[in-house]
Length: 159
Image (tube, rainbow, N blue to C red; front, side):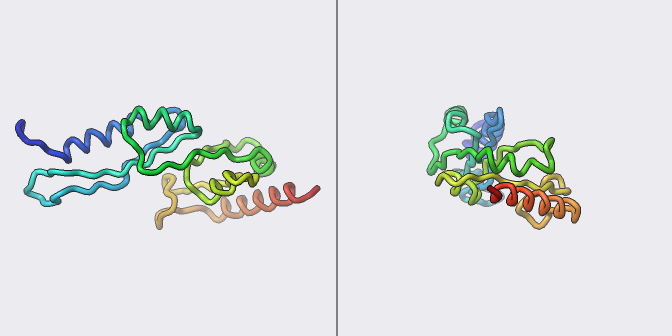
């Protein structure tokens, strides 16, 4: 075992390193792993991993990428949401937390183009599962989200 050059073992250590580097609102995920030759009884010779690194600011993203030690194949700069939509969304739920999404939603494109933008998150009852068949939201939370969105739109469109 000590003379093997196991690329998958090295990749596993890198995946742990990626997770350890994400702090202070930054996140990093290895979501795809390709192993070659991908056979049960052959020591892996090559492994390719995908890294999705996100942070609330460009500076934090730079720090995260440097800490991980990789050169991104592509990069989208973080975009801040706007105060007015956030304020309008918080009218019915003033104590609700303001979250940083980090996701590349359409909101990111709109905000980057200068359109005042905010996002409304509705909790998932299945441990935060999102964008999957396991996502589950109560009828009450959906109704509350509709009320919050309706009130926010009324505030944003009333002179």
